[in-house]
Image (cartoon, rainbow, N blue to C red; front, top):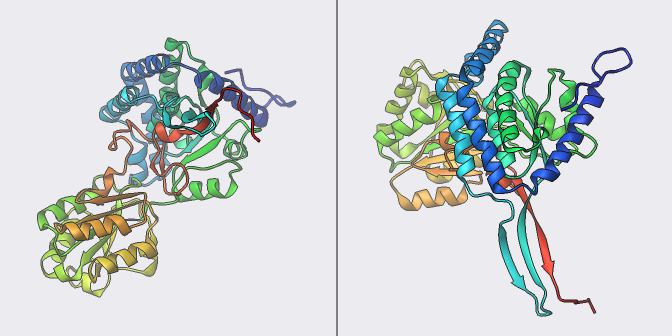
Length: 430
């Protein structure tokens, strides 16, 4: 990457800098689109090795970011998303290894046929081009996005949050080391080298046509801004208002295990459950154990009078709560009149992200799986499986709740489009 350009007064010219980054990424994208699977995999292998070898440097940079976040009064959930440790660094490297091991989606012919006039037509997967990723707090996104974009033949421009600036730089250096090892252009994975928030606006404008798609990873305000202002397509979800419905035919032990994990494993992730729906027909056996379990685990429970009567610690629920992504150890609870009532509640308040049912009734489970209009629907499993790594994608660049092209976890395959290759023998159209 060239040195930052300067304005007439000697300060960095952000517009020129970002335009230069975009042009570099576009050049790299043309080379990556033709790169062999072997070269891409060699780069990924070297990246994973570099991350493991530089764990101490990454942790040191992250410690500075965490200290700054705590001094700034950030919430415990925010700090949890920001913080790295040995296990999370190993998980980053392991995720890159899994991405390397998956089949290269580029060049796969998904369908082919022959027309009556003898022409053959095939649909083949191709990279999108340049992906812009704008994210907050989670520095592991830099590694996940870099790996997935490389595997799928795309260049990527990463704009991390100011809170994770040092961590992202340390991780990015490892990614660059991998690109150098494989002889691929360093501009294949670019990290915006400034905390200036104006860089986000420039990326949303597309950088003079350099960016083909934007992926935001962060809070509701960031995603809303991206969806409102982006001049290029967006893969995103605005929020994760996720539900767990405990049916009358649910095993109590299973329900307790799933609900506790769905809410409390990591309350701040987008796959965390925000609302617990319990079949009224099971209230006598399921309600008190589930609510008490959550409260005893340190989770704030909000509910109506029937929920509050279970335990004095339950707080009153408001209509606003049903549509709230808490990103914290808080959950709203409600009794519903069977699966149809649960479906109606989810349709009204859900965000089309991830919803789960706990039941031993196969017919009720199928009804829920078929009728809930969300990107991810689970039966007898925690909502926290809403993750590309858990789907076998190695990692994800984000989760999309729209209905065009990519939906659910966006992995390497979802970062490709397609084109039609037509082969003829001199045919002309009458």
